[in-house]
Each structure stands twice: as C-alpha cells, then as structure tokens.
Length: 62
Image 1 (cartoon, rainbow, N blue to C red):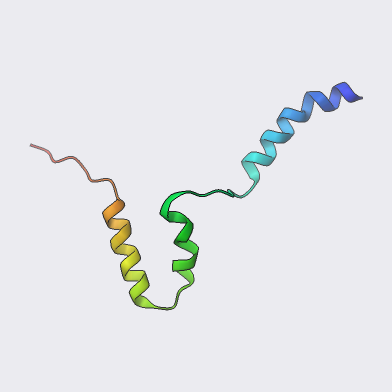
Image 2 (cartoon, rainbow, N blue to C red; image 1 turned 135 degrees about the vertical axis):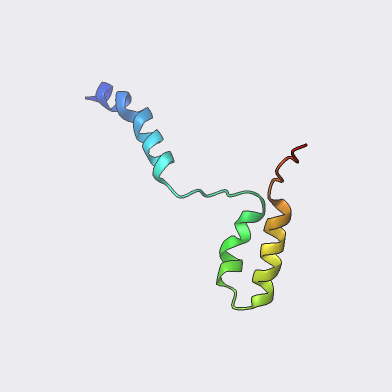
C-alpha cells in the first residue's frame, strides 16, 4: 500500500497548492484588505490614484 501512497503524493501536494489561499502576496496588493476596510474616504481616493499610476499604459497609436 506504500507504493500507492507514493504514487498519489505529488498529486496531493499539487491539489493543496492550487486550492490553498496565497500566503505570500507581494507588492502593494498586500495592503488592499486594509484599505478596503478603512472607513476614511481619503484613503480610498489615495488608493485609487496609486492604482491608476501603477496601471500599465496603452501604447499610443500613430
């Protein structure tokens, strides 16, 4: 029965990795939940300005 367990072990690890919540979010998005829960409107305005400045710009057509 050990061979069966060793056969399914990689699939089990992959399943848990795909269905678990991301633990190490990087960049500015780790602050998103804090900003979303803040009642201050100024924080939301500053967040939207920050997100617009980080958005990839579209190339200009000539």
